[in-house]
Length: 280
Image (cartoon, rainbow, N blue to C red; front, side):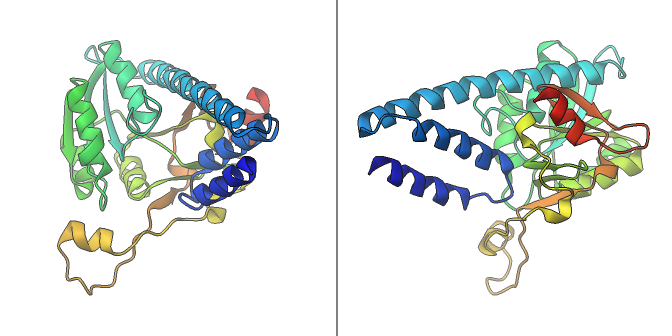
């Protein structure tokens, strides 16, 4: 029947991105909606479409709240009259969300207030989400942006400077360890060495208190051809191509969500479980 068909497709969708907890949360939410829906195919479709519209509107609202909290927090410390200098990686804007963005949504809110001094986007090898998508959004929004090769981050921070790195997240564990697009861990190390704040900006539902640390996160590995084709390497060259990496909590300054910005406790650790309990 229709419900069984939909449940089967949901299980298939889960295999598309095992690292991202939000996908699983959304599918479980939709599964409950379908479970309680009338049995006719038309009624089930109508219920799914209506809830999808609700989820779209909620996502935009949550993203805008992330941007507001993030911008408020950054501006509370960085008082340059021209605003804040950011660095980001991958794509976390309107093309990756329902229409506003998480990390790029913070930049968008700063831009709205005329407080985005500059933003540098890493190209995000090997699939180039930064150069293909984020660069496009930066240009479309009229931001003062610069595109960097991933390997240029350290030199850029040393020579040009930045106030904060703001990145997205596919999953944040109970201790604050964060899975995000490959290259994020590298950027966090560089940022810490250079004394630059490093923030994660992600929806509240990305906080996964069921996993104690990043060691428990399943990291999706992609086909070697993505590296081969984008780098013009020999076709028979062996490749390792993880789509994500895990940034340890020690490199993260704070976690920006629609509920507020989670900072570290006095002992230098994140109380993600306490934050989730407080705001659930």
